[in-house]
Image 1: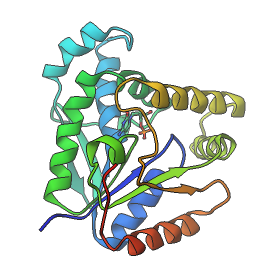
Image 2: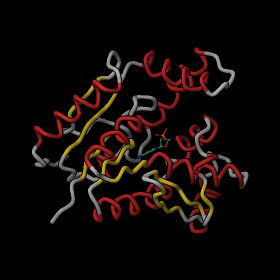
Image 3: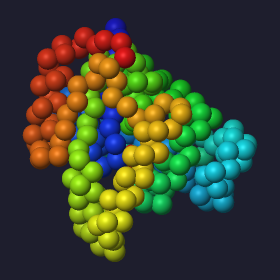
Length: 228
Ligand code: DC
């Protein structure tokens, strides 16, 4: 029997991972965070002094990079060449590098294969930028989760402030706008809403409300998806 695949795409800071994690737990599905995989590759480039604009060096490095995932207490762990990098990939520096280097198809192809294999093997909720449009075009449920840039910047700012990181609201907002621009306008698999994705705007919604809204969408879909 075909496994159930739920795709959640959307821009940075829309709340995809928080919501996807909660729903995966409720439904007993596996949560696959594809952004973490791009971050692991970015971490490799950063620690090997490879510049994001140096496509030749990135292509040359790709065969020596292995990214895999495993689960510990239900939490996805990303393993880069045998090392668990979960603790070092959540920074803004790595996030921006991931956005800059995910524009290359040599990087995307490596991770897309892994993502498709995971979705073929288990019921998954997978979040990212191109899941409904490219990685899993046959996913039974597709959600496009978004929020205004102000709301997303505020969430990111609060998150950073809670961690005690010094940050400036305008800078956080600019950073998100740059990331949106790059992720939405790159040539390969840009972020966009799949034709059959259901849009959810979480600007004025709390986490519980968003989870509830998406739960309804999943129930309504009855597991029957359409093509992008
Ligand atoms: O979701 P995130 O912030 O962890 O993702 C980091 C970057 O990785 C994002 O800005 C673009 C890239 N990415 C991508 O191109 N495709 C995905 N499916 C997931 C992330």
